[in-house]
Image (cartoon, rainbow, N blue to C red; front, side):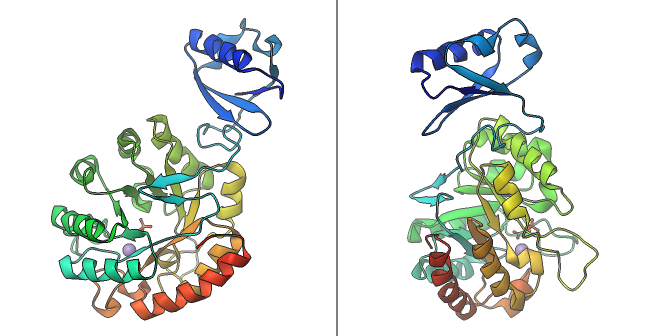
Length: 337
Ligand code: PEP
Ligand code: MN
């Protein structure tokens, strides 16, 4: 439920409502807009039957929220969220570029990539060191060693590091090495992991599950947010359909749907969505045009030699040409790149 306060409601009116909610052991989340304040209520509302909130001074109306996700719901928090990472921001008119190899393969590889991306003005470096591969025989990532290389790259370039954690154990190992955690598609339903990542207070990129509906995805975000961490960035990375021409099917309509249902920023990952490097630029242009908050794209110094996802990775030259196309497009779309 949300409590919409009247335009003329005073701070005292608002605080009195909050106190009543707290007396009933409910959580109050304040969202202060230019015109009105909205108080989101979390907890068992059935206890409120005799509280008569609707007649309290300053209260305009009570609106039930029928969706099972609340904190991630746009009704709860009408203004789009802006996520701060180091000195950078995701959301709020920025078109953010997250780039880097699928896997951290060695010190030189990640440092070379970080230096190149930094020279292009990219702020967010991605790279997996715990790889959730389809086959157990495929490269599983460098683990802690890879995290140390990422940290070195961050220290040298000032970039923010995004890396995937796949379990409670890998979350613990990664905790002091990264700026943003990534929860991959395969773990979107790992609720214990979501709860733990929600307790860290660090921003989280939450990828959409392979076959997850938007409702399930937002409920997964809710798991992170109930731990007290509201810094969630959604990432649409393609869903499984009957189509086999691409690795997955990019659900571009997820962007306006999410923007209607949620205040969380949303990125597009054209690399995992298509699985084919040649298709990546077109999908990136679609991401800008549809109003996404950024992209996560795989870039590798030598894609042909990549340990994972080489076929969908751009080389440096291809990435630079892509940026040259995206910059003017972002400007037309009113985004800062
Ligand atoms: C990745 O980002 O390298 C990855 C494994 O992505 P996804 O979870 O979307 O498959
Ligand atoms: Mn990958």
